[in-house]
Image 1 (cartoon, rainbow over the protein chains, first blue to last red):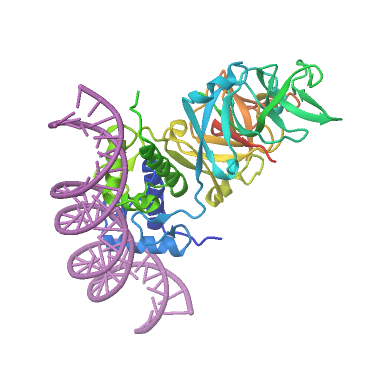
Image 2 (image 1 turned 90 degrees about the vertical axis):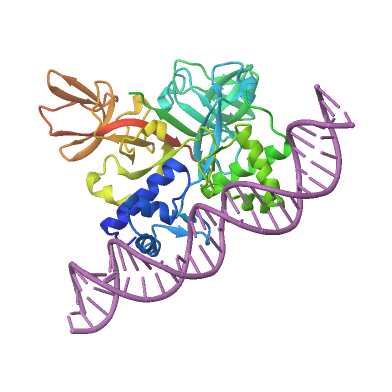
Length: 200
Length: 200
DNA sequence: TATTATAATATACATTTGTATTTTAGTCAA
DNA sequence: TTGACTAAAATACAAATGTATATTATAATA
């Protein structure tokens, strides 16, 4: 476990966190000093303590060269449209919005995001208004949730493969299961992430 | 609309984006120069072009002082435990993991995250394994989903207020509705965000 | 043709920033 | 009491960084 911090060290770390959140970069020693009306030397000591206790790490002698251990990095994922839009593929060039997700989730896969409409996957916890992140071109296994083009209409369904046939199931029983016998099914990608924002 | 970039300017901007993603800070003029094996002066010119065309902005004469216009900022939200842990409040000091969400969602509210266990909210799209973000101390309105302490056990429920009484409803009908008549109910906060990661 | 934008180099300088050193002082525990 | 840790200040120095200036060259354009 990590060692405990003193009150002052905690405050300095908190300031660094906030600064980083607001400015997308670490503060300089002097920027911290200015905030707390401290001398440079005092801040140096606090930083030294935070480093030795493992709450910060250094990357060389760069400017703004302190870092959080295990800091997450983000991929910018474009929101391309909604899953029942039909014109789905055309909107790919027109990403107006982005969501940002950890790169340990995207893992170098090519991803895009879609807004969900409808209730066909409600029993699996996907409801209208959710934003889903799709990993493009990844081969799904049975039971995975996928985005597919069914006769050129986009849909979110649960994927099943059996005896060479593909089945797309809505977990909401009021919708039928689609099979590759009857429909022209094109798997776009596999669901890897979902975010939902509650209004208010 | 923004003016068009030359091929080289595009490449420089792309490098800056990647550098920012990987290092959570902007590169220095010399770091860009080193990457492209260019002189400092050349990079200065590219930056000047990117600034005048509106693809970058400056914040004073700081080190690493370029920025993206409309850059999103993130709040580091600690994951404090699970919603049925019971020892919920004790774990507050022990944040081992963090999730990062846009500050336009958190809006300066004090937030923390919890892992969901159980199926009591499945019909509203909250399933086991989801991570929910809670805005601490925010007063809920009827219909909002909240995290509450019920006789010192934590729970995710839908909040209702009627005639001075508080009701906590599980959207899954197999669980009873709790009322402030029978239970000691303490509202911790209101749900503002949810993320789900699909394994595979 | 002259002008403008792009692209690149080289160099000098000023400012920002990290780091080292020294000193003072309070608290707490061995 | 001594030692260790924390807290703070003042100062100096070296390294990193931004910025200005001058120069050359090419391509497109009015």
